[in-house]
Length: 233
Image (cartoon, rainbow, N blue to C red; front, side, top):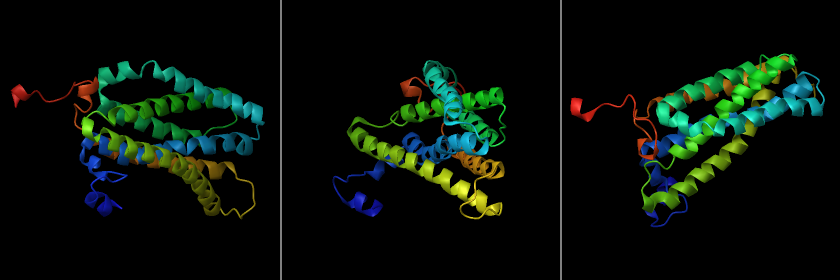
């Protein structure tokens, strides 16, 4: 497909946009981040209902903390990016998200603790998704904007399904590793290992964000703190 896109004058998916560093990071590295983070909405309701034995109503109340975190973080996203920059925010945010995804697997039916972990995870999730969506087009020239939008949207939609699939496969693999036979109810140990896999995948994506320049996204309001001063070089 890539070779066809290079030869065709007007390809449906123009991969040449991946030559833009900031765009490439949001598509490639961002896909791994979205898959790891996207496994949680599949695993978490199952943990509450199957692992903890909570009713669907109580499980829904716990997940309400996730919605509150997502919405609440939107009000601070712009100021945080302007203060610390896209590179620093991405590195710190993905690290926090990965750690708290792993922490989800260590939860007990203690509701207050579960609310805190779910809330922090959702805040990190919201911040990272907003960062990726903003940074994607920071350095894309106007003639390439349509092609970049098509590729980024396709990658984003694809990783939603891949996140759910990764969560399902991780949970099934964890059950197999723990000696469970098909048809048996998943145990807390199964969920712990599945969340661990999702968290590790998310943490590994930090490597890609570390390759961003310190002034990445400066043209759209990202902080330039830490960028080298040309006058001093």
